Image (tube, rainbow, N blue to C red; front, side):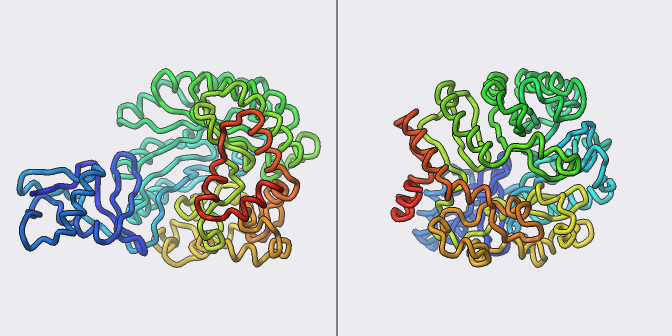
Length: 488
């Protein structure tokens, strides 16, 4: 009875997470227990598991792994390919990187985090870029999403793509304004058998050009969405909201769904970067109450239209019109031990690499010069050191309990274990210089009764819809907090 790991998988491990099966097609890791992994190491086509000296527990694990689709019976001596053999990385696990390969752009966006139209953060040399690519591979990072600025303006774009894929790093998404998304670009990806998602900004029917700062931007991105749909490339979108485009929200969502866009994330324009420098917030910005009112009112349109798209309305509400009987309240943390989770759960598995090469938690933090200056440049320190012992690692390992203890308003708050202080980038924007500060917009969702209004509105519009976080809280036995949540 010989087994072999299927060709699509490889065996990997990291510090504190030593036993993983990595899917080489999806670039995702599945972590297993040591007993299962010990059985896997014998599934290389050279060991007969029927031998009497093989423990029954190993055969049992092998049958389980076969049922899960990881291994297959084989002829004796089949062996594993070199790339499938176990490799352990001496650093903490980081599944993916979101990488600004340039700080330059071909738009003049009024709200840019990076002030990219002016090239404020420039871009790294080709040599430094390749050094980071090698570091990503040497640390076992599995996938990368590419952003900017506008990533397609880099002259060595294809060299970066090829370097990543040659080292087994998947390219999950390309974030773009769509101006340079054309037939030639898509043919380049098709030639490489790559079909990343193109995530493109779309800022309202009839209003996109104003925010992007150049005429014809909306026409160009519409063409790009249609082209991707026709060529079989998945798309996603992000939409910024301000006073003048808010009334286009329903029309814009339905347009994106009509061109096959898979997901849409929305947020009001943040008063940072070029938006702050231009003084646009006072006249054009939406405050928290205006944004939440817009979202709440839109729920009627959402359940009436059921657009074929997954919507993430900031931290307010998330749902997919194709699966309308489930919805999410993203501000609610339904974890088993909430105060012990990392203060930014997303950042624990996904890092942001700035245009300067800094290891950061997310892009919104990257324009806060005073804050980010303390965080390491990967091309200087090395990614392995960043993922082993660094200020960056210290930041992403900080637990939610530290946030709650740091803020007086959180200590006795009834919602503290549900809110956990909110988003760290938003908290930093509210309280410059303090990464542990509370996110005031998330705080208002709880204290001002918005979450109750959402659940009441959804129950009215779609009685069969169930909140994922409420379901999870019940499963975890946190009914007392569920009652708090439902009665806010």
